[in-house]
Image 1 (cartoon, rainbow, N blue to C red):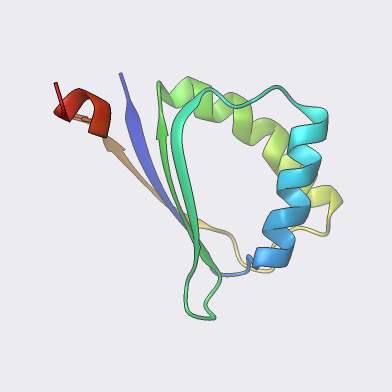
Image 2 (cartoon, rainbow, N blue to C red):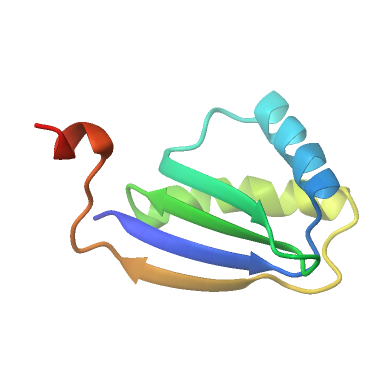
Length: 97
């Protein structure tokens, strides 16, 4: 069942995001997520919107992500995470049919 996560990471910066992203691409297989968007939050960290095939797929990815974040110094504030079960999902391709 697809799941939507909204992650508010007040301690994240675009510089840290790039470092983490580069390491994750080098050390892991591509994630099983369907979608991710990352945006700076007006000087208040970053916000991530993620859609995953399942919560378990995200858990597998986060296990490695947490390790990389810790190796790069960790966060001074823990991210706030909201999870939503997706009721309906459409893409531009499916909507055009």
